[in-house]
Amino acid sequence: MQQPEPGLEEQVPPAAEPAPGEEAAEAADALGALREDIAILIEDARTYAEAEARFQKTRANLAGKTAGRALVMLVLALVLLHIALIALAVGAVIALAPLVTVWGAIAIVVGVMLGGVAWLVLSAKKDGALLAALFESGGSDGA
Image 1 (cartoon, one colour):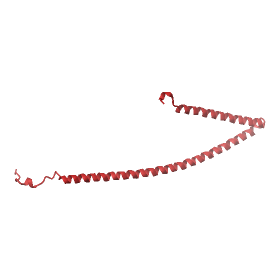
Image 2 (tube, one colour):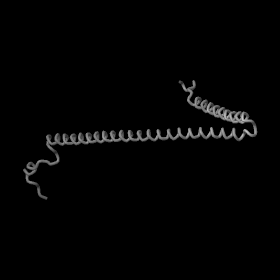
Image 3 (cartoon, one colour):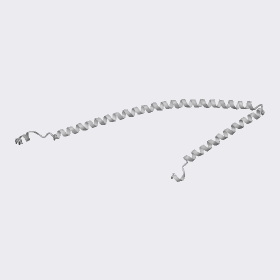
Image 4 (cartoon, one colour):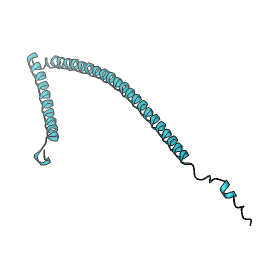
């Protein structure tokens, strides 16, 4: 093996170690790139938030229009149901009139309807009591 000549080692600077000024420049470049990435990330987040807000606004608008239409249809259905029940009551009075007097037929039809109303009110009252019990704050929960 040959020995390197005594002066060659001193002529070649070591490539592995950067100069102190280069380290600062690399750190500044890395920090600048990180700042740019963060700025892009913030801009993307802002764009996403704006798009999400527009989407939710459009969805709420559509839901409002659909709910309004459904409410109108429900009201119309209830009006038609009311007319049908009136027709049923009149028809029942007409059908019962030959068997009992007109006044008797009216009394029977009104009595049956009032019985139905009483049953519906009692059912609603029972359901209301159940709801009240579900949401009632008792002494055992510390409230």
